[in-house]
Amino acid sequence: MGSTIEYYAWDDFWERRAIAARYLSQQRLVRMLDDPDEVVRRVLAYRLTIEHLSTLMTDPDREVRITVADRIPPEQLEQMVNDEDYLVRQTVAKRLKTGRLFRMITDPDREVRKTVANRLPIVSLGLMINDNAEEIRRVVSERIDPEYLDPLLQDNDWLVRFSACQRAPLNKLEVLLNDEDKDVRDCAKERLAQKNKIL
Image 1 (cartoon, rainbow, N blue to C red):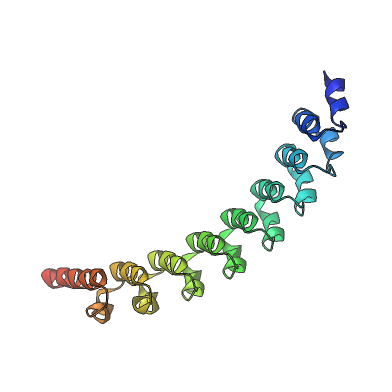
Image 2 (cartoon, rainbow, N blue to C red):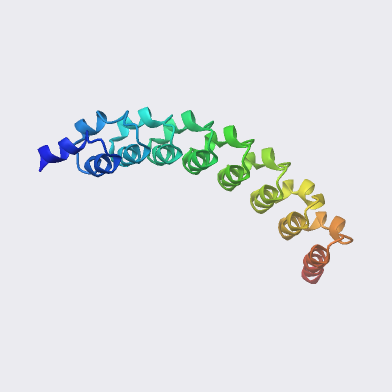
């Protein structure tokens, strides 16, 4: 069977080459790295040993690059932080060491930045407090040290203010008692009322 499978590795039809790639030895797989069909290279991205994956980091097919980003060692991921495809960068953001995520806080894609905001060390979240996407600022409001919530208590998005109101120190909530949004006002009043009950 081995010789038959190797025969199909060089078949004119990509389907046969892709099937063959599922069973070939690592030595044979390396010889297929320049296969013209992306489906074949996707199989390679799944099957190749880690040391051979770097060759596919710049593959023209994004699914190949996503698989590579999901498999390569974390220390090699920084080579892919500027990939042209947001799904590749999001995969990188999910795996990159948290101490290196600051490189991606200004990524052009919101979903990538959201992933970063969810993983960034708390001490670095202030770097994203003015992100132009409300969704990102909401994540920041849920994770940042409560002492640094002041800017978010006056955010133009009511959900951000509401989230900040739930966590901010009680002595900073008075600014929200006259908030334009009822839910935010009620949240501030309720928390302050609880403070008064305790006192």
